[in-house]
Length: 378
Image (cartoon, rainbow, N blue to C red; front, side, top):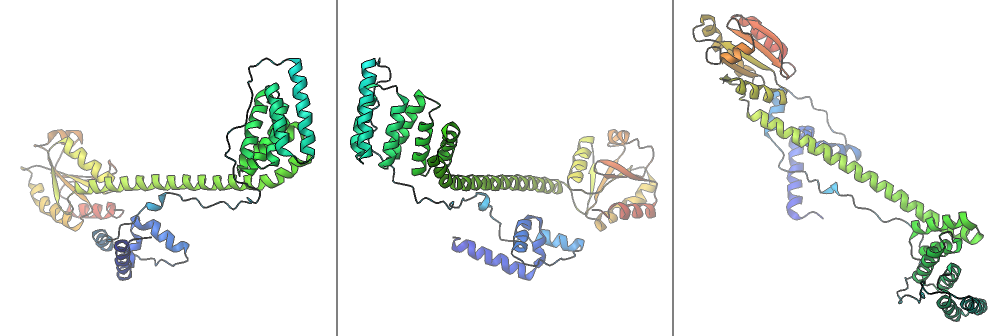
């Protein structure tokens, strides 16, 4: 929940919107405008004059949008967990020494214990069956079938963790044990490990399909698919958030660069240039701010220049979004040489770092016309 200060700040922001709906067209509030439209709201289209944009830029909303929702909070997955049981947390069952040498007598004795186990299990005496199978494993600790068989009995008494341990041992000794994959898959289903259970049961089905595996898959696969769909959905959402965050950071960086560029430009003023480095800095700033730049090449001894200088200054006040530079060719002769200036006054029009037009001589009318022509896109 938002705290009281945030609510108060949001309320002030809404009041500002009521007084000036054009605030919604501020680029930094695009996400908020899109959200309103997603709710069915109609955002008024406001045609602004240049002055309106200046006023909007000067009147920033006091409410600062928060991006705390960048983190994706996952919802719960609707799963059928009616067959899930509480995990058994008993100490691990005896496994025997897999490095021990097994004799024929040991194998025969182990087979006898297994037979006793199967008889006990058939009578519903599962604990007794587990005891016999454990004795068989101790006699023949490298028999995959003994571990897989005990795993199925642990499933019958709802001890899935014990069944997983036995199935792991069975698959260690026989990686192609269908019974081992089947027992582990069914045990993982009991633990609610749906994707792992589906994977094991699919392998078991390929090795040796039976109806019990098919029945188990019918219960497990829907949950596994829901989890996979859920994962993909939130992976997509996180990716979208990452892209939105990257785009926002790029936009914020661009806006910061534009603000930095604008701070280097003096609206409505004529800026004197004394070196190529100064000119380069102003040219880059004008390019970042997408502004028309005019270079006025002059000289103190030039009579027509003395006539054009006040005209040029007056034009600067009339076009505050155009960058007006002045270069004295005697003081900054390197700049004049770089631009091949052969006479003064000369006015060069620069857009995006490239010259787009030029006026030579004290032609006030042509200068005004060119400024109006090229500044229209500012």
